[in-house]
Image (cartoon, rainbow, N blue to C red; front, top):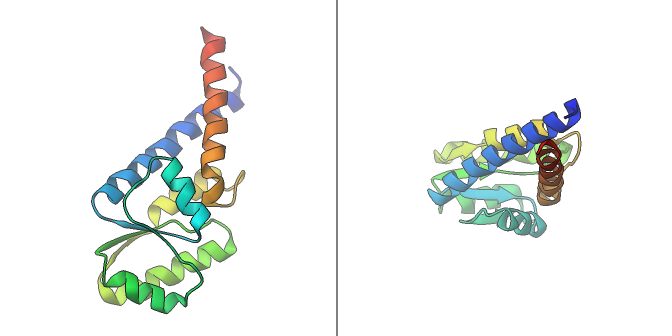
Length: 143
């Protein structure tokens, strides 16, 4: 087993842990905020259910205001590019006066794990599938 394949297997496991944390929080009522409808589809395909809300082009302050009145807890999963970083910061800032619990740590964990290879939530499913395939090949090779 190569160092790269071990790293891929570990990365796959760590991404799955983050996704499980997202599933648990979403199951507990947390609203997930993403940038667009393709991000919603990607998360659904990864088995994440609950309320997922795309930003959808409306003014961010209005979006935060609407979100605050229907949510006690929000998970921000914007892309991990410069724009996504800015959106995450602004959403958290705009929700702060409403005493809404805002979790950006899950986004940060995903970003650390995948930002060298993909830049957005939309690509997460395909990326994870590739890691899983390489991990399966490793396991078959060991046996």
